Length: 482
Image (cartoon, rainbow, N blue to C red; front, top):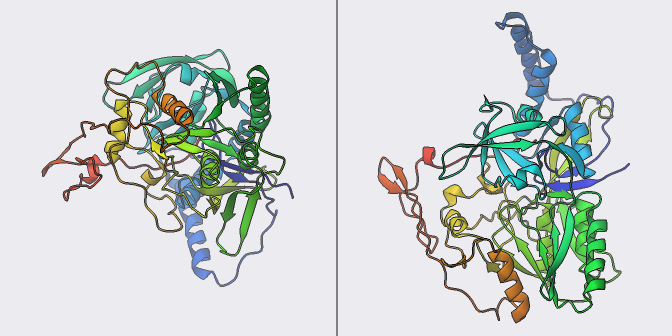
């Protein structure tokens, strides 16, 4: 049986899913002793019959049943779901690294489409769309309340066709962005020199990522034989294929565990080890850059390199997507597939980072605005934001709102990459401990107005006031994935 795993933030069209591909039997034997289950199935049939007979307009029973299946599966957690045949085909295209669209990773939040991250070198990235932006309409037609799969399909079209998105961004008036659709052929690994240091950007994990990374590293090494160290940039990397995450980790390790996954049975542990053919960087010092858009397979890589003491981690706590989904084709894919959460993954030291994420060794915000988001958890989007997210196995919780250790000083050139500069500083000084620290910023913390007065003000030490924000003031997430 062929089995390929993807570890990602599970976004259909514009991103990758955590997937294991398994065969599904054409016919299943009904379990015994499930009288209540069969009674509810009979009720489902009765409801479908009544809708078909009495709804005000004719209905498409196939669509109703597909929606019911998807609702059942998505109620389990944000990353499980039903893929209809078209969606299943789209998912397979994405893992090959080429697909049509705008270049976005999106999810659903309170009936609106929310951007997780734009993909490098795509129309969305070039237009300046940002993680956390909401897409409220396409070509003047509202997306509010539309199923995410349907919203994503509206973003697709022939290459060269224009599309206008209405964007809502925190702290700004709604604005429109005009894009032109492209065939998205993602180059998931590329690099260049930053002075005496090599820089490798990995934006996702598709079937070609490791080959691209190897070619990039060899090219930089050939042109610069005395590279002093390397930065591996995994910011806004939503994940992808598990085998690619393991093989990317193998480039910097010489054998040993990269990740393990554990399902319902605690004795059922599957371990993935790095190849024992040597560190391609020959032990040169490394820093890995992460942020809240670093998810799943990217968290596997950063967690492995951190646990194995191969690299220092700089940036912000990662997304916290530490679950594994298995894609189960239904009747060989003719009826689509189930995408079902079947396991959690663990770093080499045994950490489950589901919901909690990978915490950096040196916490650095990219901008003062980002520092304020971290300082007020009402505005921070992560796996823990989902109301039905799978819990961390050890019962750990994500770090509360706090002031990041560092953010750009007031006079810092906004065109420069502050997080990258601090990563280079760590390489220059030899370690996080030896790197001179900047003053901890004191961002102006947001106050959410409730009937009781200002609330939601989080002091820099991360201790919340006794009067929390009202339910209406605290964003909630309900994810389905395009």
